[in-house]
Length: 421
Image (cartoon, rainbow, N blue to C red; front, side, top):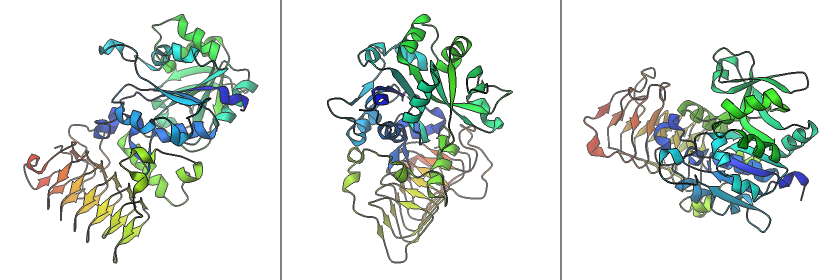
């Protein structure tokens, strides 16, 4: 076993991810399907596996069941065996809000017993909700070479986006000398990716100092920078925070874009196909005579009789004769009946679009959703899990259909842009 393999990995996977709207109404953000065959957390788990790291704790909180089912024993990522393992770590106490994790540092603090029972030289702390490829073995070696107490994965982002991140100012050695958490007026374009390597003893001591310090970015990292050795690990590969509907759609589209930087298969990203409604047993995709597909990803078990353009289809999707799916993401087992149109939309699992219906109707992409203007404002329409769009009904742009919407929930044959059912 390589020395860095003894590093303990902790993945923060408990966030609500509320800006993903109804995609997280029934599941935690890290378990949202992505790229047809994966879930978001598969990228963190596979990066850990590819680095040869073998001990992982996954800290869950919000709607954890689908995530727990997906991770299972950890076998798809080779985390089973005498010297390896993955452990789900929910909040430790009761049902009161005060018992939930109050922040990233509080979440780690509540799992001190797990950390102490897995002695390690370093602790690698990750988020479970990013799409990226990263060589953690190299980051750990960098941390050791620098004799760092804390090493933070950092990348250059446009200054217009830095307000979403923790930002670090470094000296010529790469040591972080100043820190700004989500600055409104940025002085740097170097953003934190939320990926940290800590010396284990250092982290345990830092967490023990003040239990009111509940967040890494707000509390512990600024304190560490002021007193100790904190270095920036430079990252230049593909990384996306898919925390908004637009970012999520963009990252999915990156997979099918010619010359894209993202290639889950080439990166060695694995998923739990056994845990996803028998994905492993699906037949090859079927393309009927006259079906037309361009610039799209079509998963196993799909049945294509119409046209699919620039779209990502998960296993089991059916597209009927004369139907058109364009610029869209369809989760498992959606059905688009004959002559229906799905245009610039995200359909959760088992959505049914009746014959002649239109999801994504009209040219008005600028009217934001009335209830959630900060979530849907670029024309994307969002259809919740197992919703039914009746035949010939027209759904506008920036609309939301809640999970399990039925035909009788529609008051007319047209839902105007920006409306919600």
